[in-house]
Each structure stands twice: as C-alpha cells, then as structure tokens.
Image 1 (spheres, rainbow over the protein chains, first blue to last red):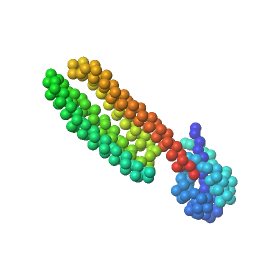
Image 2: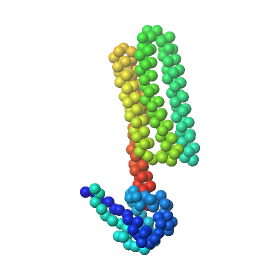
Image 3: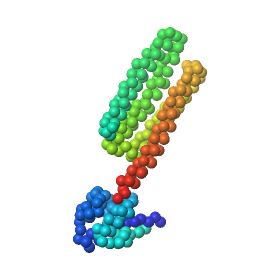
Image 4: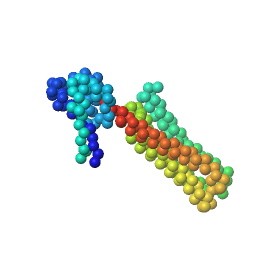
Length: 71
Length: 159
C-alpha cells in the first residue's frame, strides 16, 4: 500500500489566529503555492519552505506533517 | 526572442510549407507528369495511377502540418513542455513513418504493375529515407518533450 504525506496547516492557522493570505505573505510564497500546499496537490516541499512555515507558525514539522496510507 | 514572436514565426513557416506543398502537388507534379507523357506517349496509361498515388502522400503531410500548428500555438501560450505537445509529436512521427512506408510499398506495387522502373524505385529510397528521418526525429522530440513536461509539472508543484 502506498503512503502519502499530508500537510495540516489549518489547525496551526487557527491556533495562531492567522489567515492563509497572511501566512503566505510571511513565509514568502504566493497564495497559489499556499493553495497547492493546503489542497494536497504539492509534489515536493523545499526544506527552506518547511523551515519558514515552522518559524512563522512557531511549531515543529511533526505538527504540520502527517503520514497516511493512501486508500 | 520573445515566446509569442517565436510562435508567430513558426506558424508563418507552417503556412509557407503548406503553400509550397499545395503548389507542388497541384501544379508541379501534374505538370511534370504531363510533360513526361507528352515526350513519351507510351507512358500515358501510367499518368493517372501515379498522380493518385503521389497525391495520397499529401494527406499525412497536411495532417502533420496541422499538428505542428497546434504545437506552435501551445508554445505561444507558454505551454512548450506539455503532454499535449508530446502527443502531437508522436502523431507527426507516425504520419511521417506511415507516409514513407506507403511511398516505398507503392513504388514496389507500381513496379510489379509495369508502371515503374527499378531505377525510379532506387531514387524513391531517398524520399523514404527523408520520411523515416523525420519520423525518428519526431519520436525523439516527443520523448524529450514528455520528460520535460514531467519535470515542469514536478517543478510547478514544488513549494
């Protein structure tokens, strides 16, 4: 069975009371790319992007990344 | 050169090739055939079969030019490396290869029908080789464009 990495930023966004637009702006990526990330269409995430996300959301990678088996 | 300008020039070349092809198939080939018949009336019975045989080779050429137009339109829309272009190039490869095979087989058949000469068959191999070369080159380009399209998709979806 093939697995996939799911990026959950909605929970952290709610915790930090931040909008998607604000997050995209602070991380330094376009809203389109943020949408790709949120909707699970991203094929790869740069470590630098992941580091910026954790910095802005004040969290660990494990807080926003989840491994799940693809059904 | 700007992408839209490049696409414009490429489309112009397609139009040029199409116009030349129409002129060759509608004027030069029938005219040359009639000249041969005038000089050698004993070959009169060969004129129509040869004209039909050669005219049929025009169909894959114009279909290939249509696909080339679509490829250049995609280039103009900043979609140079896409699966659609790879498919169009594959079609062009099949059309060129098919046309070359048809031309070779047609020459052989006409020879057995006493409407051809072995020397002409040998000369026709030049045309067959040219068609095969276009077919192989298009197949190679199709493969490379597909690989580039996959790389582009991966890059576009890398955040």
